[in-house]
Length: 212
Image (cartoon, rainbow, N blue to C red; front, side, top):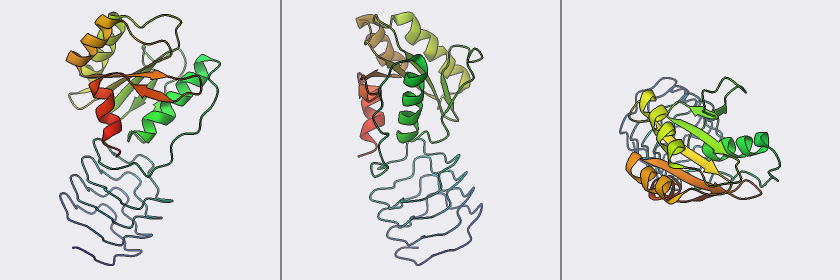
């Protein structure tokens, strides 16, 4: 439907794959665990809507209102136009833990809303995991070498072809590492002293661009 009024509707586990819901008011509706893969939700009112566990992968959310929407365990992989979500607050990065927490917050902002930190010592070289992504933080004093890019690409490949791989580094990457990341589809970010990431390569820029 278009321009429909579905305020407070109960649509738990509804199958709305590729649905056209432009301008639809879903304010306060219950869409938990619904399938909205590739749905079009231009200008839809989703304020206060329960989207927990909802599959919104590859959905088009251009100008959708998402204020106070519940997004716990929501799959937003490759969803478009999430730019209205609040950016993580700046914080000083003084320790490894600070850097990892900041990177996790930014991964959630980038659409991997189920991202979480792995337990210390049990990560197998991965600091952040989500259903469709893995992240690694390098709070080093030197450039990240190519071997780290290759290792993380291997971790992502083991988790499936749709798994995004993100690397965050304070001091940048070697030229071979950047070249390898382009071929292996690893998104590289540098991180400021307040935790804000800057995209280094095309894959990182693509993750940021889909929010606009």
